[in-house]
Image (cartoon, rainbow, N blue to C red; front, side):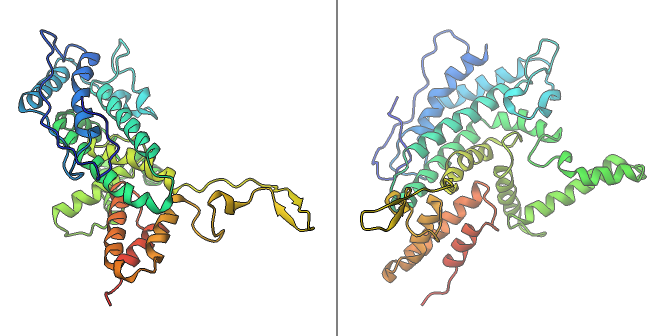
Length: 359
């Protein structure tokens, strides 16, 4: 297998479609370990392999593609009873007890494993980020583009998981927006004695209203084209808590937010109770000098991503103004895609800078 890349756009590598691995007489759908062993080489090739075009993921041969479709289909359909009763557990790794033998609801194992796979990939990407803040955006944008191309390819490759497992989970109120998120509405309804002739329809109506309200936060307006609705809902899915079941593509973006973006937006904790030591000439100095640790201006952004965006916006090179605005637009779109709200100050700064009139 090709060496695992880290998302840089500078690597000029062209890969041939990956062939179907020889499995002999082994049936990849006979068990979950067998299925994962069959899938993982394809995932590594599509998501991790270096590429000369970060917007296009490396491909696999048609025979391997069809083999994966068949293996996943057979694995899901050979499981017998499908029960979603266990999906109310607070974390995916606790999805147990769908039948009397204590087996997880069928499909939860693959969904959870993919989530863990994306978590590992994203942690690798963060670990490979440059230490210099001035280089961060030049790394992050092609890195995200490569990750997005790969994970969206996997989303299509494993679409049966979305149709068989995710859709049913969402229908059973385990998606990004749940009735449990509307405790105030449910409580008010019960306090009034559930006076509606159709209580379920009443609650579903209120849930649709809440859904529309949430989607407006991601730019959707009533009457917008369907693609606007899809974009807004994908952002809402990516912004959801890790225990919410969402389509595989949105799950990947959520992991990128959790494992890459949030650490880069984190503000380092400052130690309290600084001690002062006297210098030989009688002045005093703090025992923790921020200037020696790259802290810079104490009034400026504290997070790495915040400093990188500040440097992008405040650069005095007027000749690169349009290029910097294009970069700001791409960073803002990336943050929206992975579920960072548009009312965050960082996104407001990016939006304001990228939309300034020319001249």
